[in-house]
Length: 64
Ligand code: SF4
Image 1 (cartoon, rainbow, N blue to C red):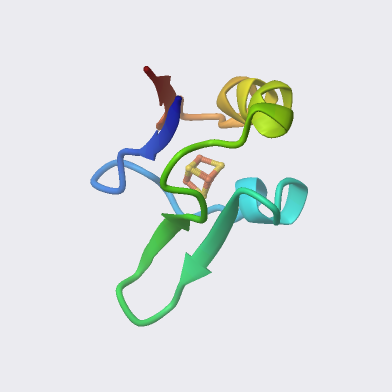
Image 2: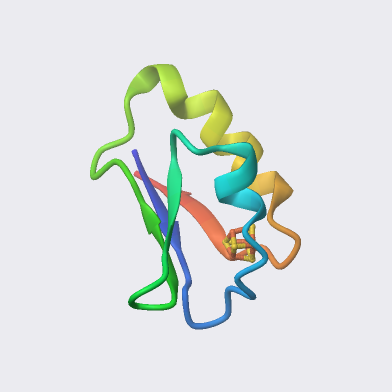
């Protein structure tokens, strides 16, 4: 599975990095949020699902 962020509509609130620093990192140079794992490790899948649910504007998604 992979995590994706729609950076076009992400409001840069920073919540995802604050709560899940093992999954996301702010990219200040490119004004976006980076996903840290190209392929999501299995042990992080539950946290990734929670991150999807926590984004207030639903700009994080899990894809197979
Ligand atoms: S929680 Fe959602 S809106 Fe906020 S920075 Fe992360 S992806 Fe963007």
